[in-house]
Amino acid sequence: MSLLIWEVKKIWRPILLLAIILIGVVYYPIRPGFYLNMIGHDVISKAEIQLASEWLKQYGPTIDRSERAELDGQLTELKADFAQQLINVPGASEAGIIDYDSYLTWENAFYEKDTPTEEERTLYQSLLNLTDSYTIGELITFMNNYDRLANGGSVVDIGAAITPPSPAADASIQRILRAENNKDAYGFLPSSIVSDTDAFFHYFAIWCSFSTILLLAPTLVNDRLHHTRPMQWVSRRGRKVINMQMGSALISGLLLTMLNCIAYLLPFLSTEVLQFWNCPMVSVWPGSFPWFDWSYGQYLLALLSLTTLLTLATAGFITILSWYSGNYVSVLLKAIPLIFVLEWVVVPWIMDGAGRFASMPVRLTGWPGTEFMGGILTTVLSLFLCIFICQRQKKKDLSQ
Image: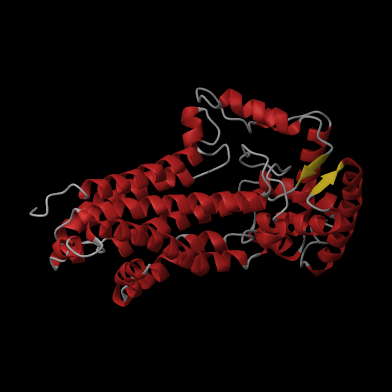
């Protein structure tokens, strides 16, 4: 155990950690932080989240058919509030806008004009900013979608299924029909939250993998530069030292992932998304359909697990390259192709749309869960190579 702790300490060098932190500070607002800020940022997603939050408190994670009737009353109240809000909109009464129906009539006429006047443009912007027009519009959309599903309709009819020639086309239709079969209650998880969550974890996984490469790339190069390997092999531990070094590298990769979770996921968890933890992923709001009957909380855990697997795989691959590198230039030249393969191909390909119809691996294979199996197989391959290298070193000639 003392040797393992010593090997871990060799990896966690302050200067290297400072460099990783600086790069992470620059990377965060460009990618993960950007999509974190997009949650509830635009007016449509903000309206969806506002409605869903109210329904969650009132009805729980789903709305059954008896509760659907209460939405008509909510719509009436919002329209009454809208009429009161029009009093504070300059020029609304002069344009004949006195309630929501007259607003829709004016809005349709506004869109039909090729060149609206500046006064009309200003009035339209004021109507959007000073009223709950978006909230009412999203509520009406939700009610129409709900009624269509409750009356025997399907999201297949509006193009939610994967289309041929993808092998997953038939599987996606069967999945939708199973989810919609004999349903008495429907979820309302906003699709904007799911898409922004997917994008956040997409780039979070890339950072976890890349930062692991930065941390572990010079790990075993130092021993070769200082000619310590022969001394390690003739010590009491002998060639088992390589087992400790491989183990310390994998453990360090997992520890770094934990630190990344603290630094990156705490801001994510501080948003309003956690209130939807128990909400089903199958939702009335249109969006990429899920392959599995997960709640939003289970979906988050699945993405986090997939990120951890890919980080562990990265730790194994870069440690092997570091073992076979004679100097820092050599390990850098080996790390560049690895970075390209992992950060531009494997990690994005596996993480993008994971667990949903948007997943490219599933679209190519036709097997739901392909992306998760890909993450597992990548990790297994990495660990197998690590074990293979350790076993091979036991037979290595000391003179080499």
